[in-house]
Length: 514
Image (tube, rainbow, N blue to C red):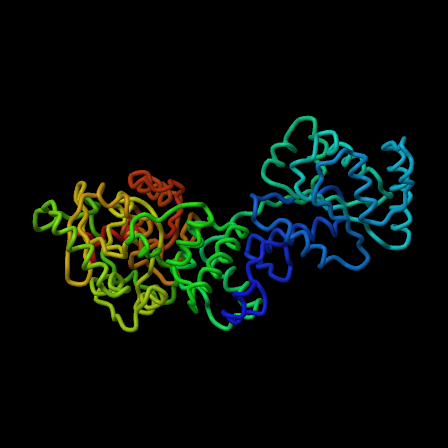
C-alpha cells in the first residue's frame, strides 16, 4: 500500500488476512491459544473454539499450527459446507493421502478404511494427525455425527485423530441439540473469544504498528478511542477502520491520525454523511483504565450519616437563552483542548502542569486521587456525586451541578446551565471523574478478607456493626448488599470500585456536585 512510505512503515499493519506474525495476544486470545494447545496435546476428543465474526479465530488457528511440533500433521479446512464424503476428500488432499479419484461409487466406508490405515501407520512412526474445521457452524448435523464416528479410530490409549471445531456462537447452539449430545460430551476443551477492551484495543493498534516498523504512535489517544467505540473491540473492524484512517491521513498529508480522520473513515465505510460542521470536532472520551499508585488514606476519612447524595445549589437555575447557548459553543470551541481537565483538577486543588488527557489519570494518582473512566447516564453521575468531565460531540466540559432536569457545566472560569434533554443528543455517555478510595492501588473487598480497607468500608457504611473490625464478615456483607440495592448497584455483597465510590461520595471532605 502506497501510504506505508509516508508513515515510515515497512508493511501494511492492518491487513485483514489472518497473519500469525501480527497476532496480538490479549488476555482472552492467550487463554484461547492455551486451551487449543492443551486440547490438541492431550489428544483426546474434540476441541471447541467459538467467537463472534472478526474476533481472530482463524488467526489463532494458524498460530496454533505454527506452535505444534513437527511430528503433528494438520489439515485445515476453511470451507466445511461439504457432505461427509466431500469433507473426507478435502481432508485427504490436505494430508496428501492417496485415494482413487476415478471411482464413482466411493462410500463413506471406503474413505474411513483408507483413513484408518493412514492413521495407524502415522501412529506407528510417532506422528499425530489433527483436523481443524473453521466456520464449523455451517456443518450439518449429519456431518458432525460422522466426525464423531471418526474419533472412534483409536489405539488402547490414544485417539488417532484429533478434531478442532472453530466457529461462531451459533455452533454452541447446534452442539446443544439432543441428537449431538454424544459429540458434545467428547469436547475436552472449550473456549469463547471475547472482543477487546479499550485498553487492549490501544495495545492491539500499537502492536500491529510496531510490527510493521512504526517508530512512534501514529494514532492520537482520542483517535484510538473512536476506533474502539465504532469497532466495539472486534479486531477485524479495528483493522478496517485503521486501514482506512491511514489512507485518509496519507491523502491529507498528515503525519498522525487524529479523531477527525477516524470519524470520516467510519462514515465512508458505513456510507454515512456528516451534516453539521461542528460534529467534526468530536472529542472522544478519556482513558478506560485506571492507574492506581499511592498510599492509604482510610485514617483521614471521617464518617458521615447517609443523606441525599447531592446538596442543593446555592443559586436558582435559569433557562439559558439562545444567546447563552451560542456563547457556550463559542467559548468551548475557542478553549484549549485540555480545558476541562484543567478545570477538574482546579476543583480538586491538584497540581495541573503538565496536564493532558493522556497523563491525567497518572497525574491524579501521583497526588493521591483515583481516576474513574466510564460511561453512563445523568442518574449515574448523580449517584457518584462528583464533578465529572463529560464528552460532548463538540468538546469536553465539567459537570459541576445536577438538580432535577438541569445540568450546570463549567469550562475554565465560565458556567452554563442547560436542560438534560437538550444535552442528551450531544453527550456520548463517556465521563471521567476523580475520587478518593480507601487505598491505592485499589483493592476489591469481599467476605473473608481482612484488611484496613474493610475498616474504611465500615466507617462509610450506614448502620454497620463492629465498626472497628478489619474482617469482612457475613454481617458486613448483608449491609453491603442492602446499600447496593438502595443505590441501584449490583447487589453482590462485593465492594469494588463502583460501590466504594458511592460510599465515599457521602463524605463532605472532597468536592461534591453542588
